[in-house]
Length: 443
Image 1: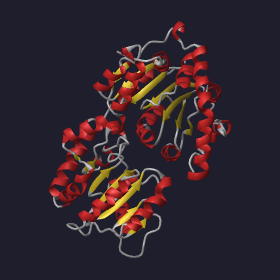
Image 2: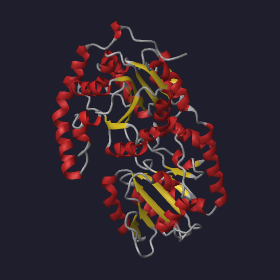
Image 3: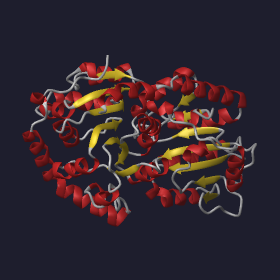
């Protein structure tokens, strides 16, 4: 069964609904603007994204878009990476169209420009209808493809009013999001929720559970298809032995020296990791920790914590001259390659209630993975890896003990790493399944 058929004109979103959403946005816009200006002034955030999302620079950026476009939206770094095989295959299948990628965060934009040098990469618009219309006029999309369900009502509704199909790929609903939607559907806002979901012509979900959870939201359940997780199709970077050796020299870590790579750390996790590694060093005095903060605005803060730990620390961008046990990676775009060096990887955002990050990024290199209990945003990947026996999910108080045990047992590390890598390879193919469903929607 393919995607849902064209929505009849009688069921296309009304202009009145768009005005209602606009009115709600206008009520909160002053508060959002004040917060954005404060973040720009105090924290250095949103300085590029805030004006870009209001269309500053849009005309100049889209000057080269002379063909109808396929608009792919990926909210941040993880989604931008996940979209790579999808974008590549769309460009191959539809050479008469431009593939345009939008993103929401500044780190997402930088990552997208690195991964898609031949494509237009720009900001996703603020969802006020007069603003969104500018994107539609400039991009002239024949389809809007949203990666992992970053739905905005005016974007999807204005697409439907223009006869442009909207598809969601790699869609999932976390436990928290599911509870929130269930609550909203029982209240007075239920019509607005349905108004946001009704225009979707195709929803490619990761698991059967996601399909079950989205069935009350999507009017035509025939539009929902279980296609798996496209993150598993992201091509492993080709990292040469020379590159690995150069990175180890930069870190001054020997080939036989244990290396723990803690990826995508959030506030509250660096202190835990530094404490855990101090304990691990009692049994493994040569172990080296790489701390890779998720957000660049925290680089200096994390470096200060590492300096104060007494373990001896350096920054990736300014190697120390003396002996160190901790390196703070204060640059973007290198985490995936650094995972390939790891003896053990700790995937963070999971020891604080963030929801976790992609635990299969290190697993694809055959590296054993350790992660915490807060993984509600990565439910499918966690189930896949644990069932394959490719990693350990532990509480904070068991982290040091688990790392110590793994570093003492190379054969167990090898077994976990092989199981994780095989699980990744065994579950690939989601991108092709999504494309087979998307292609009939593109004219």
